Length: 122
Image 1 (spheres, rainbow, N blue to C red):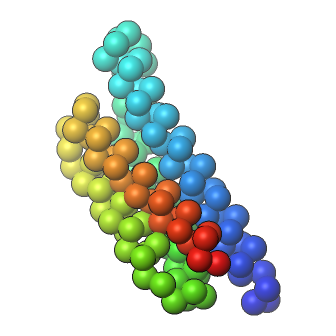
Image 2: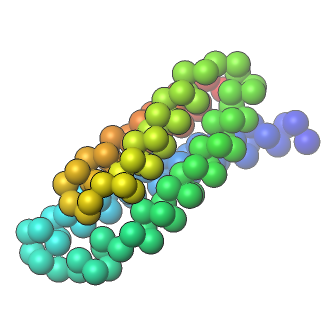
């Protein structure tokens, strides 16, 4: 059973990095399409995307980085990822637009860095 944890954690770290990249694409693409072209505002800026994204990011980071921290005993990946999740949570309180996108992008980059560091530590 213990041999399975590193495999699961590594998969979750990679999934977390992928979701972080997709989130950045969503934020930047959404702003470009909505602000630049006036397309898709009701769909792309729907708060459901942000709530579900934060929930997924929190679950994946908690499991992957939590297991990694228990294994390698280093706090840095955990602290960086939790700071990123805090930025993402703060973005939910910001009005739709550039402020929300900047907070979200900072957050997902920090979460992705936490996942990368977690992969390297293992």
